[in-house]
Length: 353
Image (cartoon, rainbow, N blue to C red; front, side, top):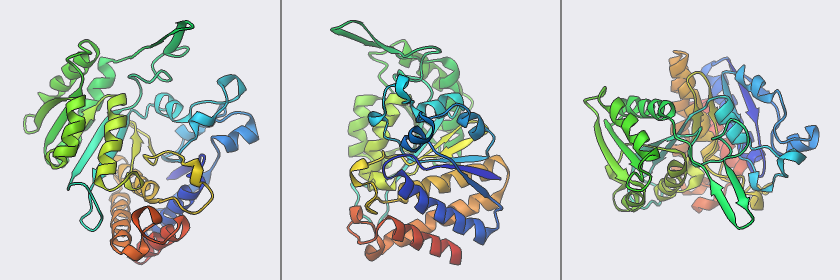
């Protein structure tokens, strides 16, 4: 079993190093037999190869059993003609990593808005994102200097499979799915999405289903987050609402995330590259560590290797154990540990578990 490691930009190399340290520790203590390989994307790739994402890297990534992808500073990349390519979009579309799974879970020993334990199942290959909804070119353009247009693509195929993943997950949890749309305005595109959710729902009679408008959902996540279990939605809504839920549950620094397809999965922290604190050992690596734990559990389920799922659970428990002690938290949570020291604490705990 092989995992490809791509540190990315900003705080990416620091949090990925911390996460890989934990992965290496659990690999050794659980005898997983993982082989870890390194490569580059983002500015490191731009400097070395003249592009943020070189030709051939996606094919290389496709040959692995899992991927660890650090955050990217997309806003700072040069134009495409000068080597700036969107990395996350390319991975999601070309490797068909269509399910962006983002849990938001509060912890009783950390400050939180309200108790919650929910998961966003976000479709990640189409929608309002112009870098992934056209076969050729961009889905955003300017026909005149003072007019800008952006196109949204919604397909029954993509909606059906993300809905199916949501219901399959709900069966393993509290058996409730909430479908989020703006169907009162976007009647065709969100209507198509809801049609597919309802179609899949008919196959899962034991799962409760509700439909909520996206603006109402933002308010309801603040008012009653404990009411929700699995939330399925399209790309744009899921991106925004999952960040809201993660911040309410304790902070984006604690937000694990995977991009999963049918036969490949990538761990990717939910937050961005935070270039303002890059290289200062200040970043909380929990999101990356928890994303790696999610990757291990996905690999365990897909390859029928229960020891991988158990290893992921051990990492989750270790992170919680370290966070439970105020003295071993990172600065964003009121503690004194830096990125590296926090990762080492978690690694030590999984090694001795």
